[in-house]
Length: 364
Image (cartoon, rainbow, N blue to C red; front, side):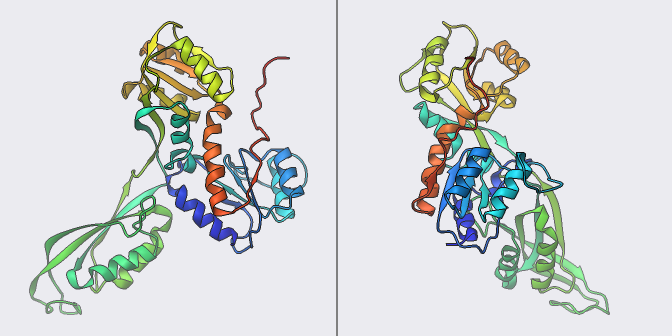
């Protein structure tokens, strides 16, 4: 197995195009052609994790949180992100980050958090919009539909999550008059011509548009093919899950106790202790900005991390209680499923999840 093979397998489980637009997922350090005999999984690349990876002689480290989140102006020995990047690269340890791609993936962090609380009747909410994308539209005679579609797919269009070759096709009639200097594929110069055509609509990453446009023109049989590009937003993954508690309604105090025992963290609670809660929303990591959306789904309590004072107050005004269990604790169930998924890809994967990245500790 190579790093590229592992990256492809991880991408099949957590499609990188479903990651949030602002996120840094995928291969962050290393050579895709390098061999992988050993791998490890961690929550975050701390100094201790980097040291453990190097000491174990790992070829590949899969991290949930990205190490390189913002551009670096240097990679030099020392502490911090720059130093850890240098340390891993110098030791030949490649690094793959999954973060929000794993949050929204089937069986990923959001699903794992919902499962940890035994939620039923689960509904997704809270879209994480991915990288800029476009829709390419063109009109092709039926004889060349597959040729043009295949060329667009080979250039990177038509991928939605775990599916490739995705397009929508409708039939219609195209009309034109070719000039005397033209060399039409169908019809004669100077004559009005009508042609049965297929309209192809296909989504594509905006970053690949130049190569996709070139492929379209090269594969199209017409001398002057008509094609359009529309900027779009869509195909999002969802960070949140709402569902019903397995044991029925709980008071907020009981729910806080359940969160503490399930996630191993002392939560902050906003709401009235004896209020009754039936439909619960959960979001791993920082879910404060989605509290309003959780309320709109009918949730009456939210379990997440990093909720600000004003978000909590707004939630209470909307009749929704908030349990802030912390950023890292709400992600831990998803780390368990990530480790299991990577073990299926690289047998014998080293478990580094015990090196906890949570900076918060109870007072001594």
